[in-house]
Image (cartoon, rainbow, N blue to C red; front, side, top):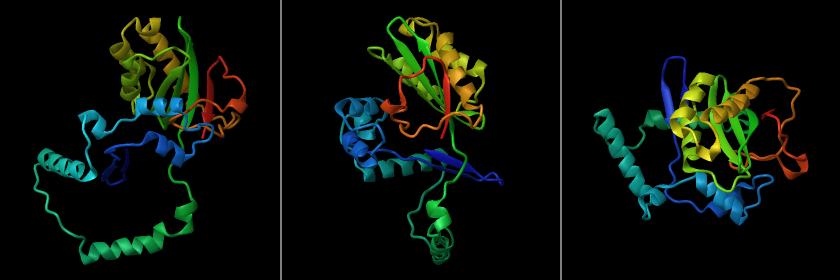
Length: 241
């Protein structure tokens, strides 16, 4: 999902809703560096990506989802939606935008918006080492991912990742969310130990030093460094992409 707020206060919000998903085919098509679409890779992505069909336990197509979303907007906003085609003015403006903007090389080849800064930190548990990856833009956490060499991550970790996303990058807020979601005893760690690792990664991500290496491979699905990069450091590390 994404959103844009302009200087006049107008908000554009858009999101992709998956009716269904062939995870293996998606990974094959994306060709993520250092992440071959192995059975393990497919399983790891499937843990973090869901679909409407999976949540409902039955196949759902795009048309059905579109109708439900339209009804939801109408109900929430208290309006009646009327199906209609774009008028001549709207069509003309759309065609002009193609020529003036979207077909121009500056738009096609350029990069828009500030890039996220990414930091990582580690925290050791009785079962192994957790690695926390945090993306930050301005002063908000844009992404949080917890992985590691433990046998299994409890379901509270996925909830924590979701709850921390778009949270202001403030240590007290991070600690409060960790307390609420994890309590004490998850992975044998106090919640504040996990909060400290999240904040260490976020703090380092906000240090825009330019002297730190840029990761040449990996993605939001597989944030671990490539194998050629050597062993994962035991101390916190920061990157910017």
